[in-house]
Length: 149
Image (cartoon, rainbow, N blue to C red; front, side, top):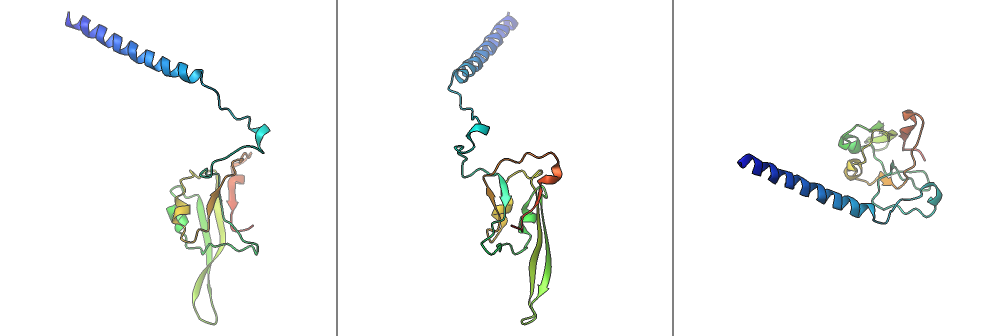
């Protein structure tokens, strides 16, 4: 007798759960749709400021950037998508050594957009922009050199 009672209790619990799920589904089904007609509305498309599209290295008018080749972004990146190559130059007047950035490579295809590299940069030399159109035929085209304009 006890097993029959447990059977009906579990049956009604399952039925209640199913009806709650169906209620949520029907409510969302009849809600106003928010689909964007993307290719047609490129000019009016509004993208949130916090959207992370592509890692960029801003340059000024003289084609200078703020990167000092410290490599903190490369260390902070969990996927290894950033590779910083630098050379050490010696100032002849003072004799001090200084790192100079030669190549800053970024693999957009393996980036997970965590923004840890941007937070680790002490000079705000890199940032994410809002561009999101990255369709390419080969993955090799997703590897970009950022330290040239």
